Amino acid sequence: MKPRAAATMRADVIGAGLAGCEAAWALANRGVDVTLYEMKPSKKSPAHRYNGFAELVCSNSLKASRVGSAAGMLKEEMRILGSLIIEAAEATAVEAGGALAVNRTDFSDYITAKIRSHPHITVVEREVTAFPEKNTVIATGPLTSEPFADVIYEKLGKALSFYDAAAPIITAESIDMSKAFFASRYDKGGADYINCPFSREEYEVFYNALVTAETAPLHEFEDLTVYEGCMPVEVLAKRGADSVRYGCMKPVGLTDPRTGHRPYAAVQLRKENREGTLYNIVGFQTNLKFGEQKRVFGLIPGLENAEFMRYGVMHRNTFLNSPSLLDSSSMLRGSENIFFAGQMTGVEGYTESAANGIIAGTNLARILQGQAPLALPATSMTGALMKHISTENENFQPMGANMGILPEPDTHIKNKQERYEAIAMRGINDLKEMIAR
Image (cartoon, rainbow, N blue to C red):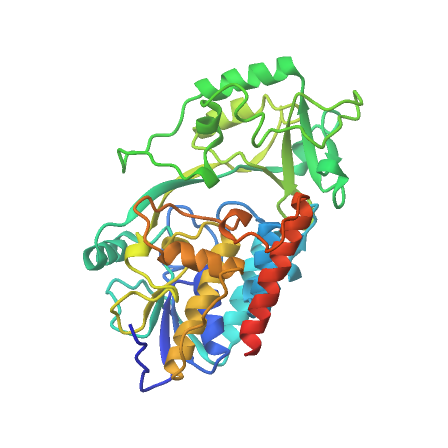
């Protein structure tokens, strides 16, 4: 469909999460007057607690920083595209080895201040319950309010759904450091993680408690479809005795200073704030009852007396059957410049959602200015993700950044790290060339 140029330089964005903030920022920085609708603080989803924009619900980590990784490659592309989220993350970062992790309240406050002070952005604090007519980016996320989700469902047909879970957060002072130790895997970066090592006997006791623990009921829905990227630890554990030991409890790259050997299994804790007073139990997204979390996770060496500042929670996420609805610019096919952005489109992850918001906002701005949408190179991570959500696929599932969705380099490189670095630099350079044209 040929884009229809609008008469005025005005647009709406619905939702002030990661994708919505990026979309509003991209539009406003291109001279478009933006009205940003956000239902907080008067109404929050079951998973949201903070009044600020771009609230991080699950983890406080934006994953790896190294450009030769999928996550690092995407971050570099977002910098090139003028990302507000990456700017905020770097300004509010906490130590996390080779990852980019943030103090989540500082991160939200930084973005909120930037958005509210932009001369081309007007924030309206109310819930939207009607489907827009034109010139809008819908970025209400996987936790879209029920009234608006129903409107989207009626307008577009069946949406797919899955469940997402968040990990617990505990106080640093409640960790028994006589049993735990600071280190990053393979000593990459600083010693930024607290590691809780298990002997085989300790692991078996913990594992048996985990797989028999009582979970919280999910009364609203009968079918439990969990996306692999946020699989509750107890669900993963039930796949086999070694499932978590090869997953979130893998001991590789760690040496227990008490024994001088690699532990049988290990749980890692990551800083939740810059001060290091709070720690997130990495990979321990869960739907266990709160009392069961305290009992079972108290079997982790060093966490016997852990003080929980937030228990793990589980909530429903929804996403569109985007390949049948959206084109490669993230616009709803056949619409008058209605774009969808963020995790509801089927990109999975913080940075993936934000990158999608940049593209949606940029493309709407370009159309309003009489230009064609960006033709992203397929070699870029951003382009590959946009291709994933717009290419017909009867088994469509959410997708995060990964090297498997990118074309192989022209020449074969045997070493995986060198191959990934070559793939990343090729995509980044191709994106730079596209923007320069």
